Image 1 (cartoon, rainbow, N blue to C red):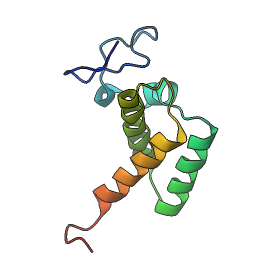
Image 2: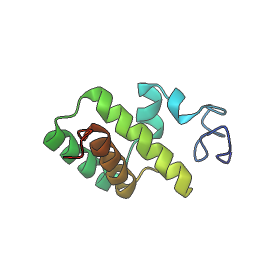
Image 3: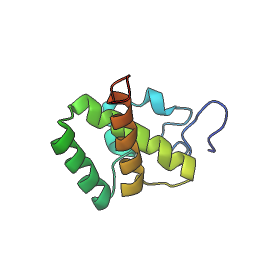
Length: 100
């Protein structure tokens, strides 16, 4: 399944029994099954959690965004660069509004 206007998941939607599910619809259990990163990705995520003091909810949110990035690149798996980009978006999301 290819990502289209609806934002469908591409890399895993067809064979995993989750056809027609968008990234936003992923439950925490689905995230752990379908967006689990490679070893390098684990290191990126673990470091971000320690340094930024992220919650479990933030952890799942970063995995969700990383899964979306991987889908947009046409990758089946979530890799370290996908997680690094997702963490950067999280940092930007938490930056003060005045730009300081």
